[in-house]
Each structure stands twice: as structure tokens, then as C-alpha cells.
Image (tube, rainbow, N blue to C red):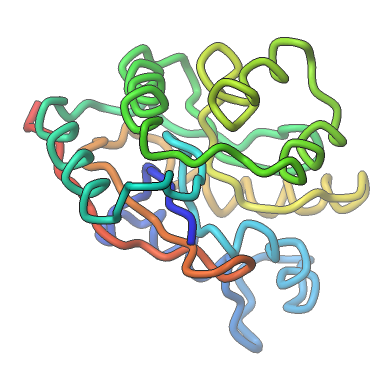
Length: 223
């Protein structure tokens, strides 16, 4: 079982409904031009496991002596000490060969929240297994990313952090162009304004390879 702390759009956010429809295609549900059901199921297979989210504390197994109740108590207290804030408007971007929504401009409050989550909940994280370290390194890491992997269990935190909401897996160049055009038309109308970050979301992966699911939302203090 693994846990993660994410930002996730609230159920009343149009992005929430879109993401559920995009990531979990129903037969004959034509949501995007030039992308058939089979293609959409294929290109969303990896992000489907996690749901639409922005990572604040990457997935981790609980350290020995820690329990889910202890973790939820810590997140609840942490959230109660932080204020809600506005996330800048999102925009569609390429990150390597996949597509994601990213803030259109830097957000210091978001960066500080992510950094604090990484540090505050690290006492609950079991060290990664050797196989996990090897898998991460096989993808190619800089010296700094490798140092972060060793210290925090994940290479893309702190100064290597880039907040994003993943919408596709890795795409071939031709796929990338087609899907980017289709997605841009779909997401831009719902991403023109800022979003209120008003809670932290604890997600759980019940068993290896199973989908992550939302366990609980922890409200931040009103802005």
C-alpha cells in the first residue's frame, strides 16, 4: 500500500468532470475530434491509474511503526496551519513526450506548499527498495536528481519540482501533435481563470498496480 499527497480539482470544478471523462473513456463517447476510443484508452492508461492531480508529496509506502491514522492526523494538523490560495490559470504544455496542464506563471505559494509537504511528511516514508532506485536511475537522472532520489525518495522535488496535471502517457511525435491540438480546444475554456487551492488530498494505492483513489480531503484555512 502506498500513499501520496496531491492537489486534485474539487468535484464542482469543470476540470474534475472533464478529467474523469477523458481518462476513463466510455464506448462511443466522442470527446475529442480525431481521437477514437481505442487510442484514448491507450494514451491515458498511465495517468488513469492516478487520476488528474498535481503531486505535492510523491507516492510512498509507510515507514515501520507508522500507521494510516498517524499520517492522517499529521496531514490534518499541517493543513490547518496553511491558508488557501489562488493557483494561476493552467495551460496545456508538453513535458517531454507527454501532455499536462501547468500553471501559466510561477506561483510561490504553490512551490512553498509542495516543498513543505515533501519535508513535513517524510518521517512517514519508508526508504525505497533497491529495485525502485534502479528503475528511477534507468530513466536518466542528473547528479542533483539522484541526490534528491536518495534523500527524499523521488528525484523531482524541491528545486527540481514542476507542478503539473498529467493528461497523457508518452506519445509518438505524430500522436503528440494530434492530441495536443484536440486537447487544447477542450481544456482552454475551463482553464482561463485562477483556481482556489483549498485542501490537500490524500490518495492511496491499495496494492501494487491498482488505481490510486482519493481517501480524504483536508481543508486548508480560509484565505
